Image (cartoon, rainbow, N blue to C red; front, side, top):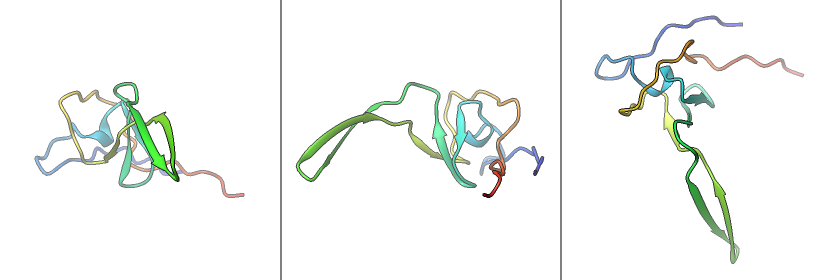
Length: 84
């Protein structure tokens, strides 16, 4: 298991980016979800059907906003799951 917990920085040299935020859920090495607020409602229309749901906004690891909350352990590296 990789235990690298170094902080990522953005183009400003700031560590206050999504990857280092407590509201961020990592999906892969570059992208994740922002869980700061409840997921907004979305409407999906396909094949003459309308479906409703809710989705957390997708963000890039190096994105940033004004509501940063420091994470206890930055999720720089996705967790390793057993293969099987």
